[in-house]
Image 1 (cartoon, rainbow, N blue to C red):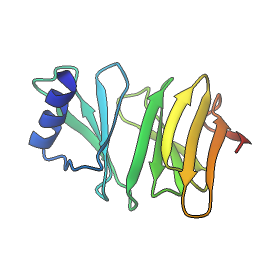
Image 2 (image 1 turned 45 degrees about the vertical axis):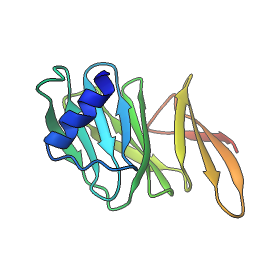
Image 3 (image 1 turned 90 degrees about the vertical axis):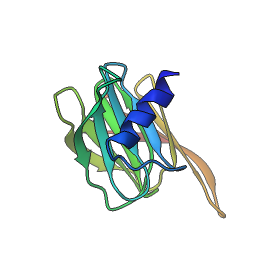
Length: 140
């Protein structure tokens, strides 16, 4: 299917893909691919037969997950920080970071959910992200 084609195109453009690669799609022709320690790659895939890398967002930590909605991209970096980017323009613009633990991200109804699972805890953290510049933790 199309997702396999997009990942193949990403690999052909030199985007490193492996078993830990994270993919988020915004539905408007932008693909976000991350994993390992080589950052998050922003790709224009409006024509999946001629994709291009628009930008690479450097990140010194491993990108564990990413989700995009309502013009904002949320990235779980290194399991410790959630970074928010405005993706309404031609290139992502850093908004800020929040949280101190993250793993998988889910976005629904202006709520960002992330769960933490380690030897000592299993918690789901919930953030109100109706204002991505000032997210509020509302539960865990």
